[in-house]
Image (cartoon, rainbow, N blue to C red):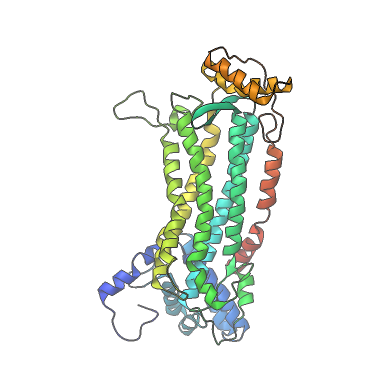
Amino acid sequence: MKLWDKGFDTSEFVSRFTVGRDREMDLYLAQYDVLGCMAHAKMLNKVGILSNDDTNSLIEELKKIYSKAENGKFVIEPDVEDVHSQIEFELTAKLGDPGKRIHTARSRNDQVVTAIRLFTRARLEKIIQSVKSLFDSYISLSEKYKDILMPGYTHLQIAMPSSFGLWFGAYAESLADDLWTLLSAWKINNRNPLGSAAGYGSSFPIDRQLTSDLLGFDSPDYNSVYCQMTRGKVETVVASALAQLSQTLAKFAADCCLFMSQNFKFISLPKEYTTGSSIMPHKANPDVFELMRGYCNKISVLPFELNRITGNLTSGYFRDLQLLKESYLPIFDRMQICLDFMDFILPKIEPSKDILSNQMYQPIFTVEALNEMVVKGVPFRDAYKEVGHQVMEGKFTWDKPLNHTHIGSLGNLCNNQITQQFNEVYKQFDFNKVDKAVEKLIK
């Protein structure tokens, strides 16, 4: 069964090839396509194309389909091309002519873009809320461990004193910047392409502002050609924001893999959160962080894949765009799992105390000694050479307390300021507006 059936059979091989994994991928979109259908039906009623009775019948049946999709019971039949066709066929089977009218002034082109926008928005909301939870955990750990010192590294060589507070706080601030990119992605995604049809609008007097309001979008994407041009562009913008977030998590996971090794012993996990070896009885491996790093690295390459699929397409719709779904839609599950797991494992990390009591770390205090000499009037370059000679001759020692006071240093983490920055961005996400719009449609 095909929406575009004209009374002749298509080659079975061509059908299989062109449909590909679309049925599988479209299950991600089912409930969101229903929302688009609801808004479209209400709009058609307002402009006089659908009667009140037809509209009410459609909305009631769409609510039932929405419930099935939400509960994982929606099925796309083997002989049906996609989610849009399945919904229309179900409506027609139940209601007759009203089901046949739901596609008026619409194309599968604007249907799928709208469903992907709504899917993306819902998944981004969950991800952003998880980022906030993870941010709060990092800030809490930064405060908790701000007085426990550790060595800082450049070139993987010991460099200067750091602290676990400084380390955890760095990732909190990284998430604050990641939130800016997520906000940009949210704003670009939260615009309505519905009504652009195949990309050139419609001669029906449709009300695109009404469907935008009903679906909780900030505005329409105005130009009907551009509505279709956003297919792939918006996904790439969102994927780029997720890639930035994944790189933050991957870097932290890489730190943890290094810091858990016996050569460092900076942090540990309770044994129940490590894994073993089939041959070496002593092993307690940081597999959780290794997999986190690998998963996040896979996410970070998604923008390049999407860009390569769309990069040489002209304006207008092409079937290549169908392939975006295979990579794009599942990535939200992977990102969500990574965030959930990181939030779970963070409080289990146990920093080691008195790391710097080991004499091998004495050289990290050379800058402290140098600065002390400068304060006493020794020119910086002379002090640098003097301390350098002490290190080479094995005579350098330091046992004085640290006194770091400037913004962002050991003694002044600025966690309150970082939290304020994060919260100022977070409150710009209009979750309440979009949640109310969706709830009003389905209730």
